[in-house]
Picture 1 (cartoon, helix red, strand yellow):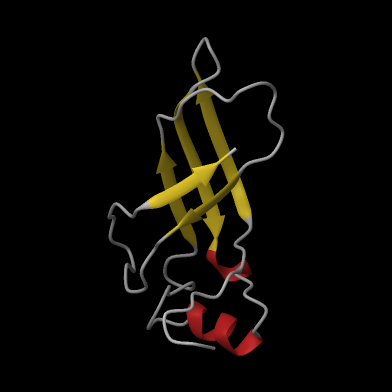
Picture 2 (tube, helix red, strand yellow):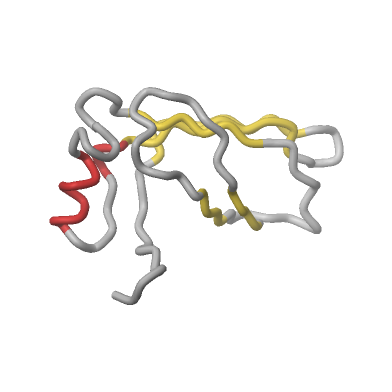
Length: 103
């Protein structure tokens, strides 16, 4: 792995809501992510991410993501992708994190 490379992975969604405006714009969104289910393709990394030093999955099993507003999509959209630059060490604290999403 080269310096500056961020591994990709996934975290299961436990629940989520999206509130849409009249024209289809996202007014507000909330997701709950299950930390224990994090998968990066490297089981050792995944185990380390769950430990108290990073995400502390036993103490803080859910990551809550709030987002919005976002412009309305062009046409019908059935899939969304996103990326959130969340830094380790949050452990129970709330903070804004830069995020990029596309639909």
